[in-house]
Image 1 (cartoon, rainbow, N blue to C red):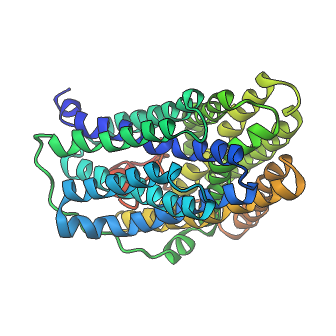
Image 2 (image 1 turned 120 degrees about the vertical axis):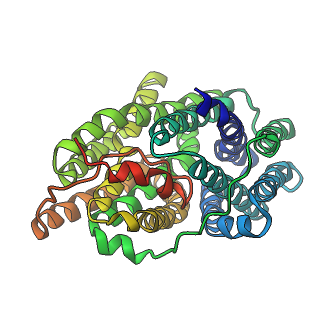
Image 3 (image 1 turned 180 degrees about the vertical axis):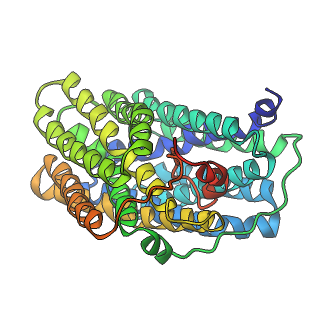
Length: 409
């Protein structure tokens, strides 16, 4: 209990950061639609977010080394707050893309600092409890951010101002905590090729996960509007997706620890294709059908990243885990940067269902590649434990290193 109390400031900052910055993407999508932005322009906003996110992951450890944790956190939060506040000052998709880069920079930078702080304070005895609470806090904050969209008016200064206030408020818990700031951690070396060397299938899996998650989170609100949901229901639509993915972690993790992870990845991708088809055909069945499809889609697609990373870590040595996590995060960002723009273009050209045909095609490619990899290399018997891995920063590998070293049941 003392441990969790000592981390209360960090966890409160996570919640406030999620509520503030996590609500920008869906609010931008419905605001852009109401302001006359094209679907492609809305997609570019999502791609810009992940471009800023990647820069933040790379820059944050270096900035911490120069000015310290608290000052770096304040700087990244200020960048995100400015990006949110400036939206209603300049109504232009190019300007909004730059602002979204600032938001992505803020999210990646702040999470890197929070995870570096956690890494310094936890011990091997307390790591599992701390990470369990951290994951719950992160998911709860994400759900809250999606639900907030139901009460925020699109293209409103008040809506963006509220999100900016929440983002800015994240500064207070971390910078005012009495817990001593940790020493500056060493930045992990970024070697993207390492992921492919350890497991080509895992590398492909995280790219597909980036394509899937970024498309739905950033362009999903446009899809919801296209199929008849009102702006007030977009929040529940996105929340159903997040909740479905959260529920999937336990049963999918159980399967991934007991059977060949490649087979589990192939079957979950088959489920992902089924979820895409179900989403398309349930689009005209009313609100309940659309929500059920979103939950099914989250259940079938969100675990892909954690299964892929678990499979990659099966072939890594303990001293390689941090750099491997960074390499996998980089590949996720590659898929996530391109996906929202491509999804928006296919929606504009072929209609809302086209986004799910695109995602289904990516999962079909992963299935074919997975079958080929199962023929090319036998199953590894000595495996690490399945771990739900948040896609937050390059430093998450340090926090999960001990969990990875624990053998699967």
